[in-house]
Image (cartoon, rainbow, N blue to C red; front, top):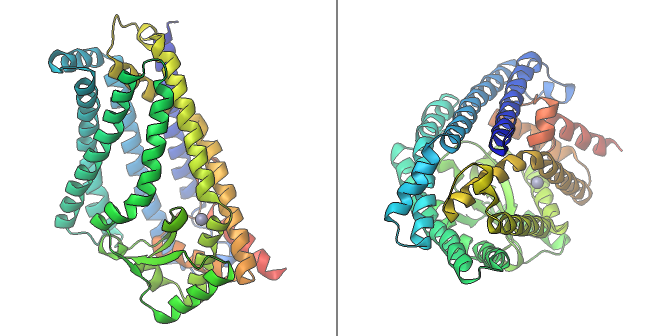
Length: 415
Ligand SMILES: [Zn+2]
């Protein structure tokens, strides 16, 4: 069996595994979605439960089509005559490695974006609208699209163009330079994104409720994080979904509440959610994620350097010659195959951090009751899937499944 055939088999196996997992998840929901554990029974009625089942199913089916279609198109492109033709075509009018690389990847990214547009339209204006979540006008959707194109374009030229220049300038050690350059950009973006990028899409402001702001201030003092910012964002302009997140390092550390979340939870529940987010700060999760990400990027850069130096991929795929960009594309695709096997590890790590943050919140607010009721209320408002397939959640879930999480939190209260 040639290496190319081996790759094709591996890719088909991974695609089949992904689609099967989606399918298992849909079936599991169908079979078990009607049951409610006692902790939820008084809070979610039969009608809500039915709607959440329908919503999960509709989202799951769309995901299945998107994943299957995307996966197959990628394979057709890479394993047919299209790929060498595209490689040749770009080379025929590019004037050097830099323009060649930018054109090569730029057109592919654009094409991917174009193919994704119908899905984005359907998701927002059909699926989300049907369940009452979409609040976006078509105008706002278009404006978002244009701004994303602009921001994406600038970042693309910086990231890809910068890396290509470094590859040319340091042929024997570019892997280290490219990694260093990307690491620096990541760090810059952490500081610059709240000032340059986020305001293009969202309006962040201090908490409007004075009473809540005062409680938040007291909680921040309690954990010694007075310098951190707690903000609210006008997420309701786009969607009825609610959430909270933490981000940033150093002086740009902040917790952000969606305004929809502020409407849905009571003050105690909001403080419990905040305590969880503060747990991420206190446990150093941002730092850990950054370091983990950088280690992975460094390993990928070095691995790519070794494979590209020997031109291994060109031979493996049976090509006489392939541009540098073409080889990098193959590498990226190969990396995405390996990424599938890495996903469960990464998810496990993330769930572990979420449990640590929950632990922290329980200690800080003296019990898990408020976080538990808050999470159940959020699940109800967002029509969250309550019954993921155990294998599916183990592989993909960044947070522990809700039933498990709430059961654990409620136990902490009774201690
Ligand atoms: Zn969290």
